[in-house]
Length: 152
Image (tube, rainbow, N blue to C red; front, side, top):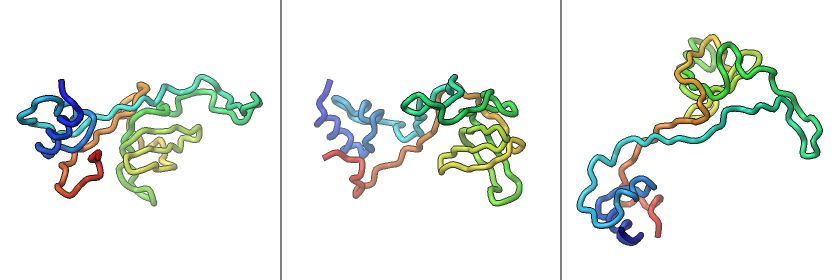
């Protein structure tokens, strides 16, 4: 048991940044918190795709059509892939969530942004789509002058 004031006091005394998980570790009477500066696995529900093949306007009229199949060249939207592009303007190694297109030219959503127009030939599946998106967030140590995440 503890109060919000006690949690904030413990967090400031131990020089721990304000996050939901670390606040839970600072509740009540706490002498020390060890091993808190580890990366956090953030999980976001992304869904498993739409069964509906036609997009509708708000009046119910057809607006656009989706592909008849969800898989293209063995990939489906939401799969995690590693794309190694050897040449061109998009050359490099990209890790992220794929959005498939019927043409085989995919978009890859990486942690730094979307990369468009990556061929299916450069992609290797690392994890099948299971309805969730995974991202590892590194914890950063709070500096003395850093008050961005601190509540007043």
